[in-house]
Image 1 (cartoon, rainbow, N blue to C red):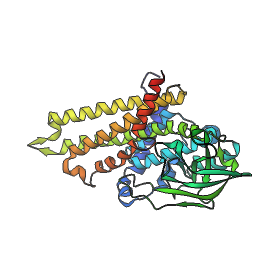
Image 2: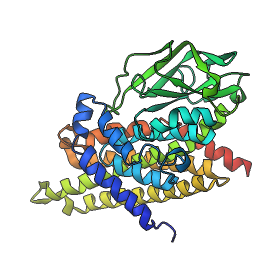
Image 3: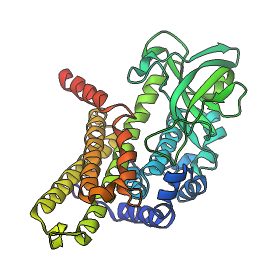
Image 4: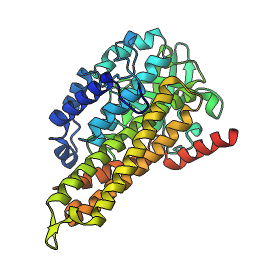
Length: 380
């Protein structure tokens, strides 16, 4: 494999994801957004293609592919709907955490239905009082015999109220990261409840809500990893999650660039297509250059995470920050090139603008990405 070239297998996976998007996602995305439809049937069709367990091991029934392949799939699906692609990304992250760190019983209980997306999983780290300071979480799990009793709340949970399983970070010990463990909690366990659906700027095709735990009894065998390993597991999951959300920004931004080229070719002002103005061409050239640079960094970071490179977390943070900032900037300029029409829901650019904005906040804010990169630099 030459640097930055895709293998034949990777191109085949990318083509399959693009065809699926063109047939099953793009024609419906505007309606999902406008009517706040959660497209569970479409999501399960993605699961049937293996897109719900891209980097879950083959031994556990997953597709067993790498992080670059996952990025290719997420980018392709985000070309049709960044919100739906991001939701599938979160499910992949949660499923991989169970596969990578779970013991035999928890894997056997949950992974068969997760890899097909018959059951859907959410990732629960953020709380009302702990966002960027994730290690300050307060949700507590007290062991009583062969069960944990869990009490607390998680905020901004994608899939809240709709997902079947919640891979949840809880405090089982001391303050700080070493006192955090990871549990799989089922939607129907007594004491689990959900807040009202959040009213969001974008990401309308997926539900988001608070998740409440009121003395929920969870079997000890539902723990993922050992006690005290939850924060490390959560951060390992986020290395991949940051790549995927960056890929979703690339896909949405690529769609916006494609739409801008089409629109400026047909829109005429001052007696000519606005594409023929050099100012328009310069804007499009900058959008393409920045998008390609972000894609190259993200693919490199994916290779590092897959290889377990010592600097993988730094590169994942850099790629997430750069791809999501770039994606937002590209979509904003695409909207500007559409003029007043770009502000209308008749065109997809305004939806892409709304959907990509949150990518700079979730999976660790872009400010926290800078903290991670700076911390790694200062260690050298």
